[in-house]
Amino acid sequence: MPDQSSDVLNQYPVRRSLLERNRLRDVREGSIYGVLLLASAIGILATAGIILALAGETLSFFRAVSIVDFFTQTEWTPLFSIKKFGIWALVSATALTSLIALIIGVPVGLLSAIYLSEFAGPKARSVLKPALEVLAGVPTVVYGFFALLVVTPFLQPFVPGLAGFNALSPGIVMGIMIVPLVASLTDDAMASVPRALREGAYGLGATRFEVAWQVVVPAALSGIVASIILALSRAVGETMIVAIAAGQNPTFTFDPRVAVETMTTYIVQVSLGDTPSGSLAYQTLFAVGSTLFVMTFAMNVFSHWFVARFREVYD
Amino acid sequence: MAIASPGRAPTLRPNLRLRRAKGVVFQAIGIMAIVFSLGTLVILVADVLIRGIPWLDWQFLTSFDSRFPASAGLKAAIYGSAYMMFFTILISLPLGVMTAVFLEEYAPHGALRSFVQINLANLAGVPSIIYGLLGLQVFVRFFALDRSVLAGSLTMALLVLPIIVVATQEAVRAVPSGMRDASLALGATKSETVWHHVLPYALPGIMTGNILAASRAIGETAPLITIGALTFVPFTPNSPLDRFTVLPIQIFNWTSKPQAEFHEIAAAGIIVLLVLLLSMNSVAIFLRQRLRKQF
Image 1 (cartoon, each protein chain N blue to C red):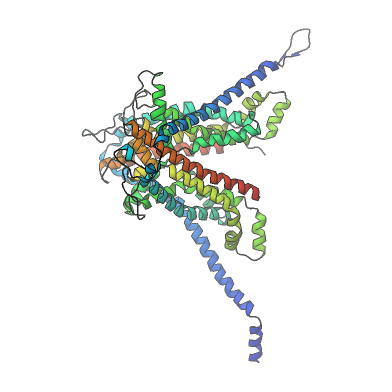
Image 2: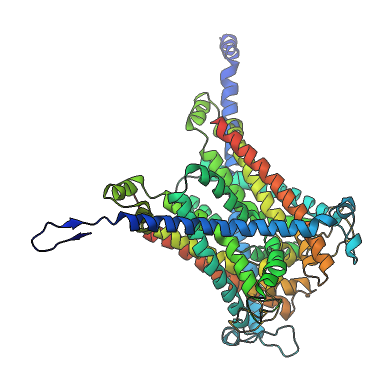
């Protein structure tokens, strides 16, 4: 009896619509997965974009300029009539300012972190740690202002021959900028040293200083080294502090008192002028950018590798 | 240290006084290190306030830039920063949250997931000026957006993407798994679970991450100079395709001038920028506190 069977079906309308809804649901879930996957691909596209954008113009640049000259000469005058393309004039300035930054930033950052992690009480820690983090939030243009208009005039009486633009004061200010980076990464590394190690040392009669210096710091060493490399990478890529306070005078020198020009400053200098795209000056932006990118990329990869390779794992 | 001498038992010389003194000295050095950094910060802020306060008035906030320090103002820069921040977050918030949800809730543990994750870690370490070169080549030239607000925002969106992803991942990871299990057990699909339960729970953390990303974006100068944001702008942008300037570029421009008056209005500009950052970060801290209470 056909009528009766259709009645039975109509008695359970829910079951059929559930099946249909299941199919719709699968389509919807699948497409949401697809959209999320696509969104996640943007990050990979960005990396690919950076590499392609840099590589394309850099290759055109090396069609016009000898790659040997680029890596061996020490004069950089691409905007003059007699053009010289020796990247060392810029790399030396970057190295100099970054080195000064490390000399200031690493000891200050490490000592702050060791103090905060091993000596400070919870109350001091809860105030001082966020206060140090504030330093990381100050825009770099503000640090540049500070280096040019406060630190340089302050240092001039003490450092004879210190020019208005120099490598010293942006280096020092950059050092202060990287303090929170070094401090917080070191603090994390020291926090992951298990309590039992400390208790063991105390049990053997060690003082607080001995525990900190001879037990916790060696145990956290891989994290500390990684934090220093990351800080160096940050200093190398830093732009506004040196662009404002270090000058625009590409010279191969390691005298911290005179005006120099870092790689990042050169990119800013050319960008501020109206450089027609496709010109050689435009391509130098990318040649310098590629050099910078390769340097920082190598440091970042090395620091991650270092942690993965040398970290002490406690369970 | 135990020293054995003939005929006598080894003596223990704990030498505690010297060893403790070392600790005290070290502690003092540690405190000095912190005082050095924080003291610098205090001097920086004090100097900026002394220079800038006298110039800070309504006229300064509502005038365009000028060749004369007395009549120069921040109007174009404030509008430009606001526009840029709006579009940056508009672009990077959905992308960042979707990436984080994909990584935490959908992606199987394996090669794809770790590749996306490592790539993000690397992007976070790329110097900001390199993003400027990317923006110049891709958005300004290839997509022919010119030196517009949109080109700047797209560049900045890529720059802050890792910050948003990492913050969202942490927030999503902190959602108790019981929430997910309960929702799935009641017949909700994965996307329904994420949308109705995971994301609302993670919202304060996501918001915090976005505010941090926005404050990073608002303080960044280098990438925008590289893509060619203007240093002298006597107009406010009317559409995302107009040219623009932002607060840090305006400050940079004034700082680079030789006259002391321009340095003083640069300081006034810095005060505005710092107040803006401070208020954004206070909101972030407030949200973090609320998050802590929730769990």
